[in-house]
Amino acid sequence: MKTVTLLLFGAIQSGTSVLFGVYGETVCELVGVIYMGIEGSMILGAFTAYMVNAETGSPWLGLLAGMGAGMLLALLHAYFVISRKTNQIATGLALMFLGMGITAFFGRSYISVHVDGFQARALPLLSKLPVLGPAVFFQDAITYLSYILGPLLWLLFFKTRLGIQLRGTGESERVIFAYGGKPILFRYLGVIAGGALAGIGGAQLSIAYTHTWIEGITNGRGIIAVALVILASWNPAKAYVGAYIFGGAQSLQLILQQRGVNVSPFLLLMLPYVLTLAALFVMSRRKRQVMPEELKRIVSN
Image (cartoon, rainbow, N blue to C red):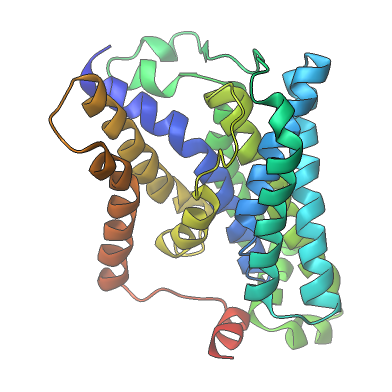
């Protein structure tokens, strides 16, 4: 496999989990809720998917379980911040550490357990395209889902009545209420859906990309996803950019290590995060980011 193709292949594989995290956080923030616990939903989804896959032998059941675990943690966040009016940032961070603690405690017995999980499958004809074909169209089922999910979410939020109501909740819940909508219900739906997407991202990481379980497997991917929402301008169709920049940096550092490039391994480990921060810096200088109005109120407080 040529270097460019190998780099793109690795960028997609590594970036897909982050992409689902960006999708999840975007949905949450579009309805006016900041979910800093997206990392918790991702790692809980990763562990639960791996555990269920190991016990049942079915990656699809593992995927559903991972999605459900991400939803459950997000539901806790929704209850505390929407119904109990707790601080969104503090609650999200607490739930992030809760997810990390749960998986560290229960995941010890699965560290040496092997699962087959999802395997890469070539799409006929498309995988034969030069350069892009082997990279884009020789992936696992969850990655293929990620390709179409961005445009589908964009259509939902920007072209459907339900999506406009959900997005309107993030702009002004009073207006939505005045038009007969239910902003509390919409917020719950958005946060729960965001947690489900994050759980899928965690599942992709453990049972489709790495096929292994280790403590702290997400390694900050959820936190990166929260930051990348800004890079995507709260637009799920643009989420590929930031996620694949991160994934590409991960892939590049592995390629450099395999080829014996004389660079400190610590610098290589920093590379994905440095490049992501650089991309955020460049994008923030190019244009003004349009933050949902409810988020501005939360940030200003």
